[in-house]
Image 1: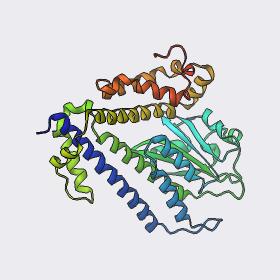
Image 2 (image 1 turned 90 degrees about the horizontal axis):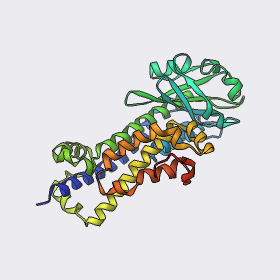
Image 3 (image 1 turned 45 degrees about the vertical axis):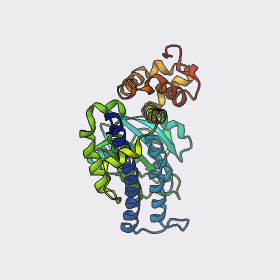
Image 4 (image 1 turned 180 degrees about the vertical axis):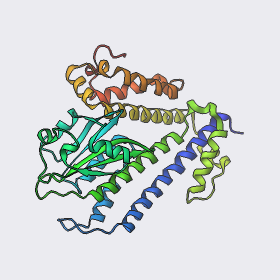
Length: 338
């Protein structure tokens, strides 16, 4: 009979395999339903808007990491607005993350946004897109970003698990610039759903460090996922037999999972602290500026992988150096624990 560790690893593999298949089916279904439901005219280049929207959604659903998904969202917005930007929400403020189409896209990174009034507050409160004048979004936005030819802007909330995690700003830019608020709304809503699906997928797969919860807690997830898949019901005994491999291979897979988790944690630090990251790299004191966020994420990583063979591999620090410091440890500063 397989021991507890083998059975736990078998459950993990089944969950991962089924959810991977489910993600594909969900992606295809979302794209198909949107194509069926939306009938809109072609853009100025002759391509139907529904076709552009399908391509944009496919780009979003081609990614699973949060940063890559947001990159794909901004890329897709270029088909429906002349200028767009993402502001990441943190408490009562939002920080500019990235932008497309502005004369100086970098100015967005240095733009804090108050969320207690104006279009931003309306979008968050109503969980719906709002439109208005540029000054209703940001007091001196026209001076800082450049006025759009038509003083009309759209602000859309990116909602994940019933919480607004970011805001998308869009306008028409020059006189001939496009601003399709309906297409943008569909793209942002779909992106929010995809972020939630990917987050649920990550949290549904237990790790070896969480084996104490046992097969009893993981089995319902396996059964529920298997019931929704198009494949035949999975036998847990067959899954266990097919997943048992050498100890070395098991450790390799554990290291891969640990590195992916470390990468996700560090990418989120970068996403929510872009201004501090830029300042830290310029002043060679990244760790000092981001100490609280880094150590909270390190604690999260250690809870999951610290007591496993991957814990001794220093994967979290490796990802800090690679992602935050562009592979230059000196940018983290002398206070960085090595």
